[in-house]
Length: 429
Image (cartoon, rainbow, N blue to C red; front, side):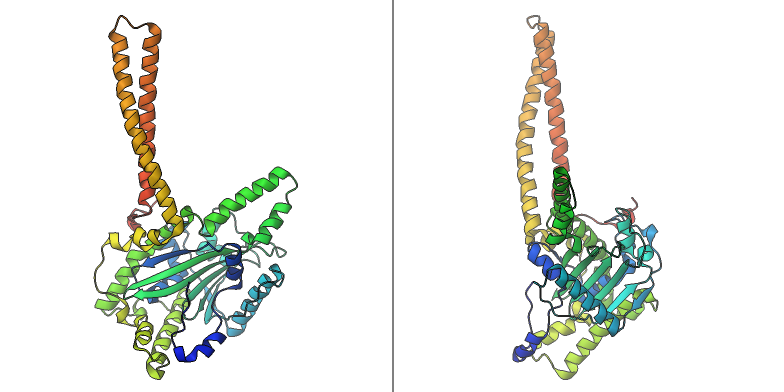
């Protein structure tokens, strides 16, 4: 990511403003510099921010993806933290990572603009409920789920998964950075940061195993899980694509209505505590835009329009996009992602090999069947020749069928890098 300070006359001030990057992510990027995920989206940054701040939508928009299920949805009771509570949480996170890195990581304390806490998170937070299907999240005093916004462009999910009080490796962040890239278009950059996957914590877990096999097994399991969650595997990116597919059509059409029919945020947000983060984000967005107009803090026309475009009707292009454009994984992600581009190229090479192998086996099958028929009707062929030709014919036909079946599976995997027609009405499994 490249950070830009828009006012060239205030570069000294820029040096004093810390970037909204968590200490956990700072440590993660030292251990795993290639981790991360990005995608271009067919809706504006203001809708992206609202959507990420809204936890209630997760089991509905993402039903059957990553463990979410609309039948698990429960009322969310959120508490908006005070500045004192936000500061305390920020100091605690910085202290924990500094202790883990033995002082090697120096990180300023950055307090979010607002932060909400899910009350009774182990029982009501959608991510906790989804996670419990893979590994039970035991409710206790350590179970916590917060959502924080750091102006101007960062939303962070912080989760403590209910481990014992002595366990300091049970926390995780999902850190998302938002960027407007044009009218009705935005980009999200996402990092999964798990305390347990920091190198020193992994090594400590390995050393707890007494046997050599146990240590090898622990390292193997950690490497597979780590690559999946940290964005270092195409499978992990595929699941994240599925998550953002679930929002694309809804938010694109919502933006269209806001641009053409005068739909306002007050028309769809609710006064319930579940929407407190959404309302807080909108208030900041409107205030930032108004302050820019009033004080001309950012003097350049281009920078001023960039701020204004995320708060008003300029953000949404009233052009009605089709589903293939809104859910275009290749142009929105794959072609710009090293992990997925390499995985796609590997699958395409295998596809070419299978095509050649399929043609070869088809010829062998034809020859084998001809030989089997000839052996069956010829009085010159012995029993051994008849048996051999029959076995060869059956084996070649079976091999050809298996290759063609594998080729079909390969086509489906390749398609996942290009386009998947996500349809909420069919997500009933």
